[in-house]
Length: 123
Image (tube, rainbow, N blue to C red; front, side, top):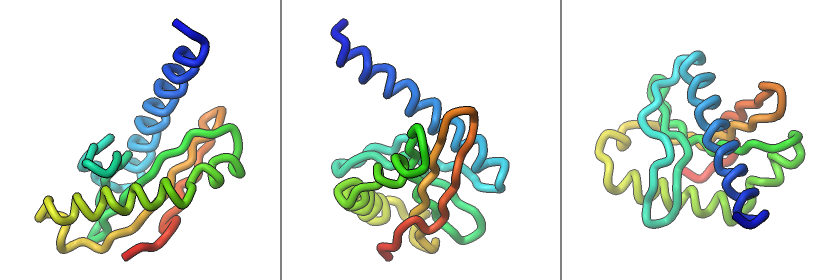
């Protein structure tokens, strides 16, 4: 296996762990997890969760520090997520009576994290 293929595999493994960690924390915070790694023709939604009347679309980023995590939410990344959510809303009736919120969940080394509610607005 080439070095770059190995690095991609490692990054994917760390990303999956970060998503699992985020779902555990969100459950502890009272969220119901409806789906993880939801694929659409426009891209993937990391976590779909609800709490009361909020439909939280959660993008998970695992980075070495807060600045790198915030920088990872690029305009292109956000647009892709919004298109995936538009597709989800058009095809899943259970989502229609919910208020949509875009969250970011940043995971850092040594189990540190930041759950940034309303990380950006679209709706």
